[in-house]
Length: 131
Image 1 (cartoon, rainbow, N blue to C red):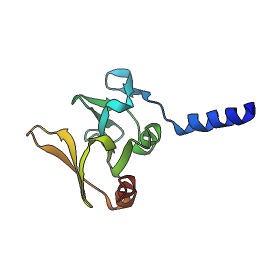
Image 2 (image 1 turned 180 degrees about the horizontal axis):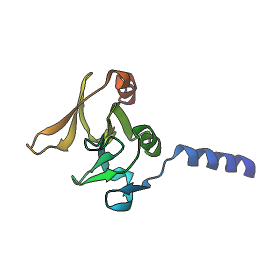
Image 3 (image 1 turned 60 degrees about the vertical axis):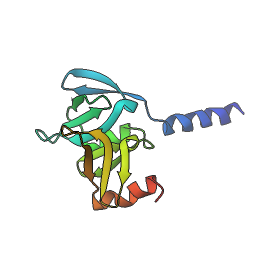
Image 4 (image 1 turned 30 degrees about the vertical axis):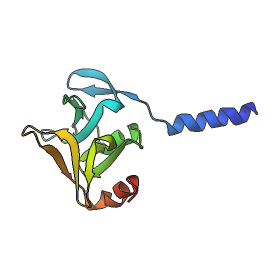
């Protein structure tokens, strides 16, 4: 019986991802709660870096991290890669079409951020939303 509980506990812990993750950023080692992250994109300055947008609009630069490893650190039920350069928090999706996502993230012109869905990621994304 104890062995069964230990095995169940081990499986649950591997399924659940951390809710706080420590990263090297432009402001040093930083612990970021994953529920604060709304959008991640590859930096335009250095492709090894990733720009993370938090729900209050703050942008933090993650240093030397690829999207694949980053996605593995994040809770799979909360995040999805939408193209080669971007990951979105599913909670920030306002409208989903077959080609585009309209987010709840405001841009400088007071309109909502629109993101293109890459062909490779369409089916996975539509499955996540049950379409």
